[in-house]
Length: 302
Image (cartoon, rainbow, N blue to C red; front, side):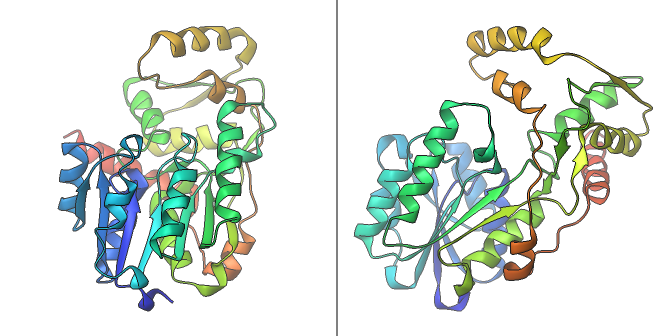
């Protein structure tokens, strides 16, 4: 099915995952148009072979982005930005009016959280808008994404460990809470695969790593990868949550939010069997992924 598209329009193409998706599409000789809200985003998109279209969803520039394609009948659309900011519904409306049919949207496995959050409500509403649209849609729900310089999860942990003499890490409340990180390259490959599969139309997929690891197991693997001894320290979330709530309020760009502290105690494992079966999805294990990420980070520090 991917051969029926010559062009792909992308929102979020300059992001951590988006860059990998753009590269894979350009390697397949697809012309890619990406929305660029800043000069930095523009430079990133152009460096990886995309056509940068200036604007942002906050400014209502989705129409300008869609009109950049030369043949909408042979154009697909990918939404790789967060679905938690209220932009999806106007995007879906614009797509319905444009004539573009094939569209892939990136949600998150965090919609399954049992913790009441404002972002979950927005994301669920966004997913529903996609599902009731006239689009040939697919929804991808990744777990925690990692795998290279620029991720917002494991990279922070590795850099912390490189500065610390020991791997003193908190197994907050529940060190047995399950995690299932997905390597960014595996995720990008699954997205492109899903875009090109007719079987994926009208389907949603959970995309995670091949194994569910306890929080302690995850920390131990990262420690071993960087050559540090793992020393778990139990820290009740109720003791540190107020600190992060205050930090979130006073920081313009908080690196960790109270919601994330709460979710550490939840199981975040998913079933990837549907993706394996329908998307030929075969992700690398966490040990392989984090070892590669450590090598990249270490090389960049030289």
